Image 1: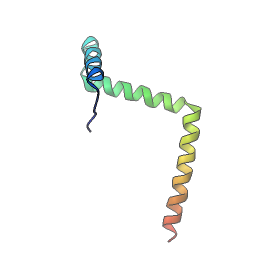
Image 2: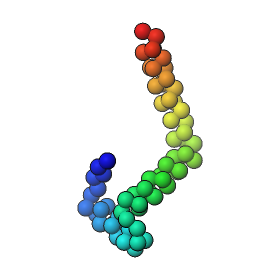
Image 3: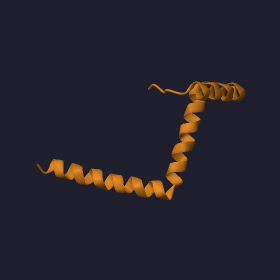
Image 4: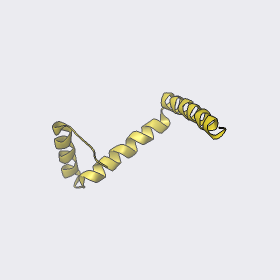
Length: 66
């Protein structure tokens, strides 16, 4: 996976990792885990997710019936 950051984001991420004494990759994984956890608790996101799943299931059902 490639992650493109601005120079400022890269510098800040590197500084955080250095202060926490962990690899940059670990800081990225922590941030992603926290972001995903917030989405799981976000009712509006969950509603959009369920609507998306429903639309995709309808498309898959149509494709399977041809």
